[in-house]
Length: 116
Image (cartoon, rainbow, N blue to C red; front, side):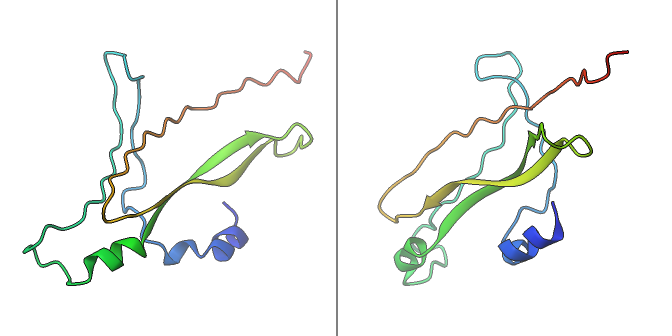
């Protein structure tokens, strides 16, 4: 990730998980299936909730952003490029429950650009 993108997106102003690496593997029906679960729950009444919790929730949102990579066929010096994948955006509603599954897959490529 280049420094210009980090400054432009103000990434250091976000609330990000402190753990940097997460191990995920397998598929939904495989014997080994490790995943990451992120829960955002409204506090229950009487549990030190602010009196205006509904307004706070409705003004909040959740962005799931990660670094994605793609193969740039026009760049021989640096064929693998990175960008911020930011298509996962959730707006909260105090009266509604939102559940979403996001499936990610590892990209793999084998280069055969040398004929010898």
